[in-house]
Length: 71
Image 1 (cartoon, rainbow, N blue to C red):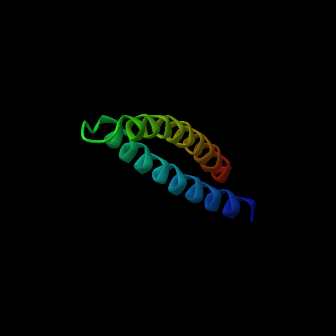
Image 2: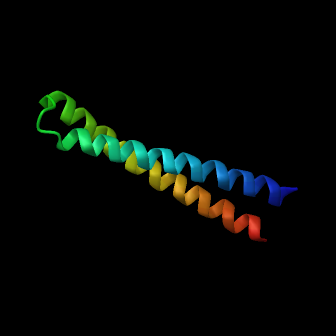
């Protein structure tokens, strides 16, 4: 039963990590957009950094759950 729980957590964390990656990339695009206001660009850059942190966090949690599901 614990293996099923770990597998479900792995899938959940993987999906959340993918969402954070997509958000990060979108924010990077806004941060690099010369037509966007300076405020928008700065905010997007900050958000991209937060998304990167979230992405790494979800990836680590997914890896832990994946390994736990194997055992």
